[in-house]
Length: 355
Image 1 (spheres, rainbow, N blue to C red):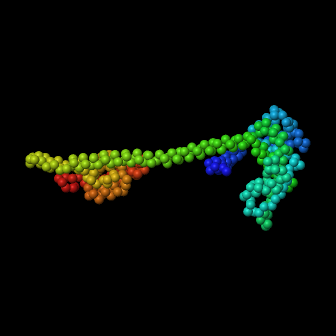
Image 2 (cartoon, rainbow, N blue to C red):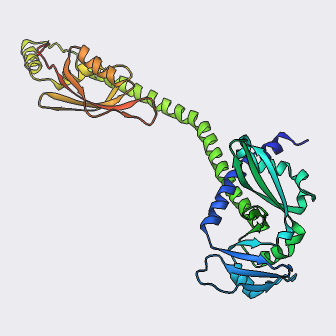
Image 3 (cartoon, rainbow, N blue to C red):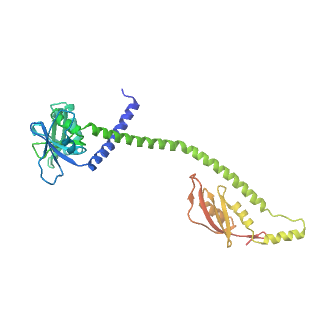
């Protein structure tokens, strides 16, 4: 009994086989040309002519040799090309089957499953193909032509074309009713190409899976690192708020002249007072990174977890008015805080009152 790991590997191989076959077929359609070859009635020679030839010319007759060395003319004619190989009608076992209309999308699988009853030879000793002959909508049936070719009949011709390095060989099997039926042959080179494509797809899938697992594993560590950095920033911000509050605490002088000087200083526009008001108004999860004053207004840049709450806190503090967001807030690298820029007008303190 196969282990779960082996079953998983086999299932993955089957899953990748579909895209690999599609890419292989696309590459074969896009590359190279094709030639038409025909096995002579005696089966001893190949008659080859280019399928795209515009000028009528006599076909090239090349004897089918059992030797491993392909004639130079044959190699020149079919090397790297797709070959459509016509065979005598006497080599073809023709079958005709009727299927219900509902089976139209599963014809290939049905033909394969019935091959044991359709063919007098084992499946390992034949090539076969099918083609829809007709559709009867009244009877809701489709008629399918099935062509069966014994491998022993075409073995010498296929071996000769294989040695000549034909890219692909498709047998064109004559059928009594209508056109010929295309019979595909699975050559080792095609299988090797699809195997390489499957290997590349498997590597891409494996790298993607490793990257996804690594991202999931590393994310908690990154979040913890950002959490530590946010905690350190909060500590520094709290210390800065305390320092601003301490600096803005009113100072009482010991003598009348000194007190008068302090009053004159308080009557002046105090940026320090605006910073004190800002420290009191900002939410705990918010802090400023840059503050500037110009024309009686203050421009504030910083980080926060809730931008609307910053604007609400400034307006409800009674120390700022006409607060508005400049531009749009940008989400930070930690995915939690946002960078913002706010323009507001501070109500400057003079002599202990607001103006």
